[in-house]
Image (cartoon, rainbow, N blue to C red; front, side, top):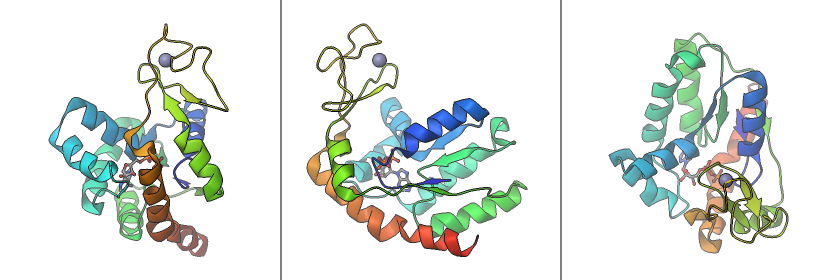
Length: 188
Ligand code: ADP
Ligand code: ZN
């Protein structure tokens, strides 16, 4: 499990470890963004929460993850990136792992100051074509607003990387997700 606030780099690190170890990266945020792009019912529903920086209801996320970990590529393990995010999700995960005869190896916890997170998130830009990440100050593309790799494909700012939504995501993290650090420390 990669556990950490928005903008802490958990997705980036999960991606690296995933390609090194050949374990699939299960990012619930990416799964929702895919559904949104496809215009599915699940996507539309998730979007209404994501745009406000709120969490999607537990049961929805749990069902989605339960479905995914039954896929054959998950049988030798996987990296959870962005799940669990609440105590009920953590408890549901325990059940799911027992059913799958898997056990939790490690929880990697990312700790970064809020001010740093705000700087990272508000300047973040992505290429929707290749997934490359940029930052308007710290990882500038060669040509402002366009991807270096994708023949000048226009960069995109996530809807939830707007200042007000960032504030809410951080608040939600501190209230609902950070208690999981203690939860996993105790169950070590
Ligand atoms: P970040 O960690 O940068 O906030 P994610 O891509 O992990 O980004 O998540 C984006 C949004 O997707 C969250 O703000 C939330 O609305 C929704 N989401 C993702 N994972 C979960 C989860 N485990 N439980 C509830 N909502 C989730
Ligand atoms: Zn690109």
